[in-house]
Length: 183
Figure 1 (cartoon, rainbow, N blue to C red):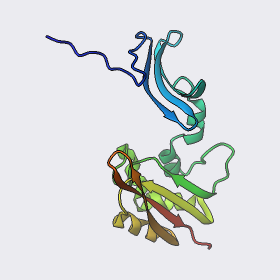
Figure 2 (tube, helix red, strand yellow; figure 1 turned 135 degrees about the vertical axis):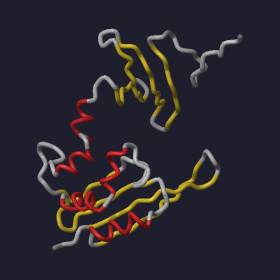
Figure 3 (cartoon, rainbow, N blue to C red; figure 1 turned 180 degrees about the horizontal axis):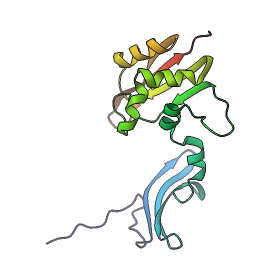
Figure 4 (spheres, rainbow, N blue to C red; figure 1 turned 45 degrees about the horizontal axis):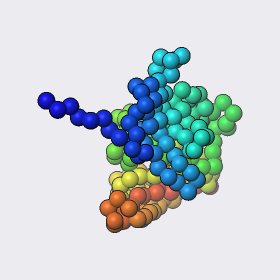
């Protein structure tokens, strides 16, 4: 029986050892960006790192800042808690790019956010005239637009088209923009 050969990275290199592997690499206008996995003996765990040239962009070993920034957005909206210890209760804008769409969520617990009660809790977090924007990977969803129209003073769905180099055609996303009334 023939065994498959190990996968080869962009540089044509096989992993140096089980302790280090370059998972992917691409040239960019800013320099080479790479995703690496390495075994960290002091943590006894695999660490994933994104690097731009010799600069570290992100590491799975150090996520405290990301947790302090993102927290659990859906839990904060549901509970009415602040978005951070130094924030006031209301905001001028809340911009969301978490799930694929209001119907195609990454976790079932997110679904309630896109329904009427969840959107009302969100609107309560915005200042008068404040803006909520949501990115979605689907065409405009009439059911979700109806929910936004029930909650916000105004709402628009903008289709954003762009070239898709993988298909040679075009792709599109939707950006929903909703605004709280002034009083």
